[in-house]
Amino acid sequence: MEGYFVAHPDWEWWIVFYFFLGGIAAGAYAVGTLIDLFGRERDRHIANMAYYIAFPLVAICGVLLILDLTRPERFWHMILQSQTFMPMFKYWSPMSVGAWALLLFGAFSFASFLGALADDNRFGLGRFSGLARRLHRGPVGVAFEVLGTLTGFFIAAYTGALLTASNVPVWSQSTWIASLFLASAASTGIAAMLLLLRFFRPATPHSSIRRLEETDRYTMILEAALLVIFLFSLGAALPVFLATPQGIALLVGTMGLGVLLPLFLSFRSTRGHPDLTVAIALLVLAGGFILRWAIVMGGQVLIPAEVAGL
Image 1 (cartoon, rainbow, N blue to C red):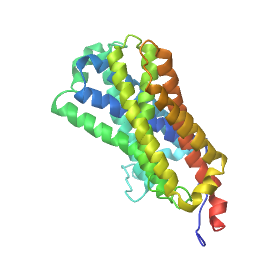
Image 2: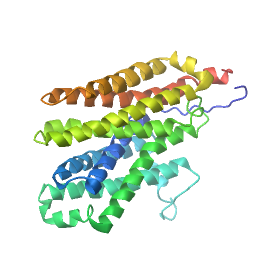
Image 3: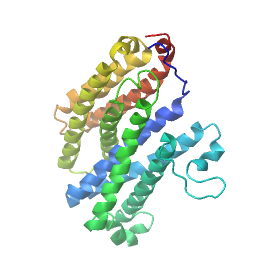
């Protein structure tokens, strides 16, 4: 790729954790809304667990993005004009679009978080349970949850689309990163729900846990297929990428330990074996983290080789 100019993005651990935690939040929130919309009333507490996961992680993501800025104290310039303090949205700027998407998803997840607290009668918020139910029932509830889910999916896929839109090797050579991140978000979101349900809601009906596990199984199959497609889409850069520590980690850590192994274990009966459910969830979460780290760091590692005419 002679003449291919690349400016090093200098993305470090703040961004890796942002991609990872944002994916979990989006995936969990989407599953929670789907349970609310199409599930049974007795599974409502599972949806609430998703909302307990989503908002705190979104809040952490906001902090991580602020810390990654060159001037963290000026983070509000992403949302407001510095002179007029009026809302500012630059549709042509990926950073502006991402900041507003995160803000909107934060608002939806915060409302659902408060609704879950009211529904579970925590911190004296039970008196607002009737109002909270309106966020999940009727036309208003359907509109609220659909819009919230769309913003969550946008956050999960946007991070991958942002990488593809750059001129960094590995990232710009594949149009499948957004889809891969989206599938991983669903898988890690469900894994986080299963993990917390095991420790904080151990009385959850086995049938409900099984449905969550089956859903996660399908997302893992989809993630495995998209990971293979992503790797082959790298073309001539694939052998060089797989020779890096990031490439090896992607194959061994994500595909092997984070997708194929938990997928194999998920086909075994987990009835009476809750520890196996915990092990699967931890493997999926570890694989999701390695996926973001390998792609974010791997693209930057390959910049010198790509510029040299790979």
